[in-house]
Length: 384
Length: 228
Ligand SMILES: Nc1ncnc2c1ncn2[C@@H]1O[C@H](COP(=O)(O)OP(=O)(O)O)[C@@H](O)[C@H]1O
Ligand SMILES: [Mg+2]
Image 1 (cartoon, rainbow over the protein chains, first blue to last red):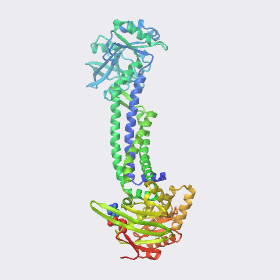
Image 2: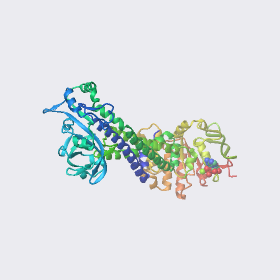
Image 3: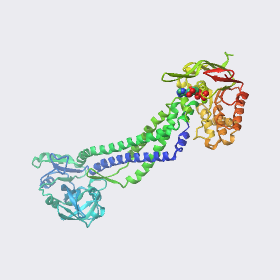
Image 4: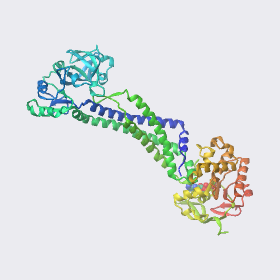
């Protein structure tokens, strides 16, 4: 009782312009949905990758949500180093990194007002962030900074304006770029790292934002938590990094929601556009459909064939979009909510695109197919 | 004669309403056609010939009355069963051929067979036989746009007979053809009629009288033996 598949295939060829429109239109929508998914995945993966399970952050009590607002005593680093067992020791140097996190406008290339995420630290930072690798130059000394490889993108400047040798100004203090680092898949790559004391002076603060410790493999983070509880005078909380970044992920939830909402609204608009073209296309087949029904084909057979036809076009668009996504997303990073994230396409991204493509083909063709079947048979057979 | 009628219509009425006005192209019509008869139906344009044919084919439903074909009360079948009944029992030939433009001659003729439990090989054999019967064996791979009007109508006839239905209905099949093609189509229908099929042919063509066993005229919703 079903119409042959080739009927659907041939019908596609009836109007090449409409076919091209349908394929490209669905490719765009599917690409948008895949982009939303890849971005969402990128944000989540980056936040997850940034939190290392053997790192513990000591923050000011009450500031667990935001390291920028956190203030802790500058003595905390030394006291923690002595008081917490299990801290990693590298050639006599303890993996304890005091840090100041500071968001401030930066002057780059003579232009002011670039919103930068600055992290002031000591060389011990390299011990707690072993995934940070210098790809150019060296770790900054006083009066210098090193930049994450995607910092230029976050600032919205040209890459060469942040290359080693360039000079940026923070609060009128000139700072020379002496290095560039990578920390693949983490939020660190969009930051600018400065000398701890420089930042303390420029930011005019006595306190640290946090102290980051790296524990020996197998050491228990609970020891750090116990220390924070016992040293009431320091007003600290100790959070394993994964816990801290999981909290940060919650900050991104509404932004991710907006990305999805935008993608879905545009997709819905495309469905209406597709509906319109198919209403017109199928309206021209009323007599043919009447003939098929006269031959004895039941309405479901005709609907299925028309839906097949539409699905073929939208799935061709999906394949196009998927190929493009796999090629393009690989090297694409996007700034979202102050962080720079690499688009991350996975099997789930392709699945999301497939669902979007199928929904587009199905929802776009069902009403026009049904409408095509509504005229009574004798009338359908009389249409020109 | 009434008892072994293949087609039997009683009090058949089809009314169209537009506001308070009602027109009845078919009005209290009685018709008996014995199995194997070739009946020609004539009448001026707008006299209700297509409407009657649609009622016989189960494509349209009567406002009142009965249509029985081969003992089946067609007007009582549900929409779904009617479609299945049509697929087995009716071959319909249209004035404008109504071939599916995106399918080849072969594929058009194959359509009715897709509704029957036949293997691909059986279908192929039957389609080839039907196209052979209408003299188009050499046009199987052609699309309708690559055929002349007369050839298109012959493909349409092949499509109407390929599943060997007992009833063949033709609605002005020569109305859009030149004289020569029209004659060929009428000859073809006559040869099909000799094989025991019941045929109802709606036509303006006076030559139809020569090929048909009987000619009826439709007038004011009823059937007459001779034109009024
Ligand atoms: N759907 C309809 N609504 C109203 N009137 C119709 C409809 N279909 C046919 N008619 C009318 O019924 C009459 C018979 O039509 P038809 O059977 O097509 O005539 P014929 O085939 O003999 O030319 C005509 O007057 C036509 O206008
Ligand atoms: Mg007519």
